[in-house]
Each structure stands twice: as C-alpha cells, then as structure tokens.
Length: 461
Ligand SMILES: Cc1cc2nc3c(=O)[nH]c(=O)nc-3n(C[C@H](O)[C@H](O)[C@H](O)COP(=O)(O)OP(=O)(O)OC[C@H]3O[C@@H](n4cnc5c(N)ncnc54)[C@H](O)[C@@H]3O)c2cc1C
Image 1: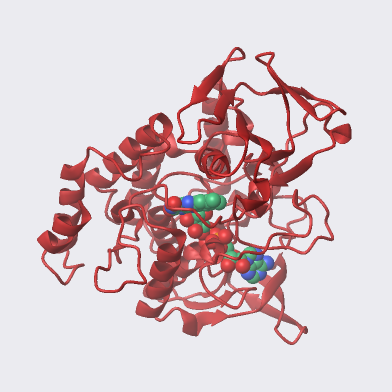
Image 2: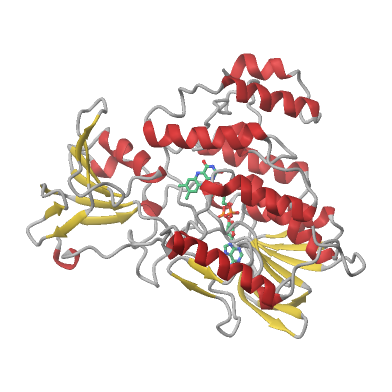
C-alpha cells in the first residue's frame, strides 16, 4: 500500500448512477467520511436489474433518436453467478425461505437480485443521498475541482462544483452490433439482446443467434422453446464447426461464424451450411459510453478500451478527482464494486496515495503490452475474469481491505467452467457443496447472518 502523504480529509463527491455500483460506492465513500450526492436519471435504484417489458423503438439500437431503455434484462434471466459469491461482502445475498415472493435458489431470477439490491440501499440508508430523475449531462474539470451539470425532474439544468466525481453508469446499455457481409440487403428482422425480453415473437421462426457467451447461450435456448429452428453463430468456434446441441425440442445447432447474408433471406456460415432465417438476434455485447464526460479528448474509447485507466479505475492526469467503478467485466462484479470503491474512497481522503501520473501511464502501457504478447485483442482490455482474484487482491492490498475469500474465487472459476461445458444445467447441478459450506461458515464467523449456517445449508443444497 502506498503510504498516505496528506492529512485525511473529507471530500464533496458526486456519484453518477444508482445501480449496484453507485449504491455500493456511495456507502464506501460515506464510511470514509466523504459527503456524497448520487445522481440517478431513473425513478428507482437498481439500474440494470430493474426489468421492463419495454424495448427500444429501434431494436438494433442504432438510431440516435430512438426511445431508450436502460435495462438489458430478459424475462427468463437467472444469475450466472451463485448467490453466495455474487453478494456484497458486507451484506451477503441470502436466500429467504420465509417469503413466497422471493426466489431462494442458488442462481436466482432477476427479480430476486433487484429485491436484494433494494434491501442493500435500505439497510445502509443510501436513498437519502440520491437525487432521482436527475440526469448528469456534462462533467468537466475546472481548476482542481469538477463541474457537474444535471437536468432535474422539472427539466431545468443545475450546475454544481464537486471535489470529485465517481462514474458508476454501467456498460450494458449501448449495444455493439458487428457488421455482417450482405446485411444491408438481407430482408429479415434484426434485434440486439439489449432489446430481447421474451421468446414469443420468434414462434415458429428460423432464428440465427450471433454470439455464444452468457446471454447467447441463454437466449438461444429460450427461443428454441417456441421457434422452428435456432442456429447459433459463434466466432470462437473452428470454421468447420457444425453440431447439434441437445435441447428438448431438438431444434438447436451450433455453427462457426457467419460468412455472408443474402437478399433471398439466406445466411451462410463459415462451415458452408446455409439456412433461410426469419430473424437474427445479436448477442454481441456492449460498448462503453460516457456521453456526459468532457475531458478535451483526454479520455477516449477505442475498440472497447477506455483509454487510459490506471488499474481500470483512475485516468492518470485527471485523478484522483475522476474515477470509474465497474469498468472491468468479470464474475464477481458486486465484490469488485466494493473493493474498487474502497480504494477510491481511501485515495480521496488521502489515506492512500496514487503513484505520479507518469508512473501510472507506464503501468497502463505495460498492461497493454502484456495483452499484445499473449494475443488478447484490444476489445478485451477490461475483460479480466481470468485474473479477477489477482486483480482484486492487488486493489484490496492497496487500500488495506480483506482479500477475496478462497471459496469465492473457486466458486466463480468452477461455475465458469460449468457454464461453458453445461450451459443448460450449470445453475441447477453442481459439485462444489464444500464451497457453499465454507461460504456460510464464513458469513457466520463474521456475524453476517442471524441464523445458524446449518439453516441455510439444509435448504440451499
Ligand atoms: C444480461 C446481463 C446479465 C447479467 N448477469 C449478472 C449476474 O448474474 N451476476 C452479476 O454479478 N452480474 C451480472 N451482470 C453484470 C451487471 O452489469 C452487474 O451485475 C451490475 O448490476 C451493473 O451495475 P452498475 O451499477 O455498474 O450498472 P447499472 O446497473 O447499469 O446502473 C447504472 C445506473 O446509472 C444510471 N445512469 C446512467 N447514466 C446516467 C446519467 N448520465 N445520469 C444519471 N444516471 C445515469 C442508470 O440509470 C443506472 O441506474 C449482467 C449483465 C447483463 C447485461
């Protein structure tokens, strides 16, 4: 940990966003003694987890004038991380067996996650810091401070000065839609997973789903329940790939990526197979987007790389006044928010110092070079699931907080392997009961649960 060089001080901090990242960050900032204002453009806490049946007016989300929707959650979504690993360390995500409206499963549905996030906000009295229906439209540095311009619920603009701004606006709202040869004249329907909610519109159709990671694997199976045929196109597969995937409807195939699409409605894969499809569903991820940030070109986004962020959090020349919580993509997201925001809070109070900007830039350039050496493309700069414990432990040491628990790291790594090898069953069948046991004993030891751990263990397994 870098030693503190200044006296510990309280700062006036703006947090943008009241999703899980903003809520967790606000708690950590206040615990460190800062005063916090949270700006949230919606009416509720929860961000991504506030499900809506509505989709955007442009189903590919390309039209800049479209009506926008924040959430990317589909109706059938269950978590892709077990609840004991997903929850914040200070407030475990416990099953509730006493309330029928709750989903006590180990991998619960999205409504259960929202209920948990709302409970977190209530427990730590975060709502009193939030200005709802207030959108931040501009953030810019002014000598040693930050100017935040927001649009309040009455439609008026407010200008305020803060010592620091922490950006917690998420990165699953601005779809990434890759170009596909011939697509301009392909006549079928196209939709990005951001706008996918239920399978019904695909009844009896032939559907091509592009992408086979968490959302692609889920959505293709969801659609297969009602469609005539579903064909997954995966860039990660060898060009010759053509496999039947076992599902009850016997109508799901895996292909390599798409080679071309044609005016007659056909889609040709790199494996040479051709299908005549009614719809394409893009499960092709999202882009980073911070439209309110005005940094004179200092911060920019290049192929999904936010340039430049020291350890994915601090832009060297603009830190510590500007920071980002939640940029990396990994398995234990809420715990990442917790550890990153403890670091931000400690740096802002002066309890921990950052290296000089040049040294931070050197570190960033070394990180980029290390990705080049092992052939990881720029667009995966912040995809750090493979080193998540190493990364989080580095940040945790920097701010003097507890390292990632052994059981948590192992659960998430094991769960990831099950997700890839058994996408249809990994949420209901597992072989890591001893890690669940370790987790609940850990909660008990830390006095985070009011019942004995056996109460949970008997019901969860
Ligand atoms: C389909 C899908 C499934 C996922 N499943 C899981 C899972 O199972 N487990 C898991 O841990 N993670 C999962 N994730 C990752 C998920 O992103 C995180 O769990 C987390 O909820 C993100 O929180 P966030 O606060 O960073 O962003 P968000 O939840 O998106 O919150 C951002 C908030 O910022 C607000 N905002 C944005 N711009 C402005 C502005 N200019 N002014 C004011 N407010 C603004 C938004 O309204 C929103 O409330 C999933 C992601 C996706 C897309």
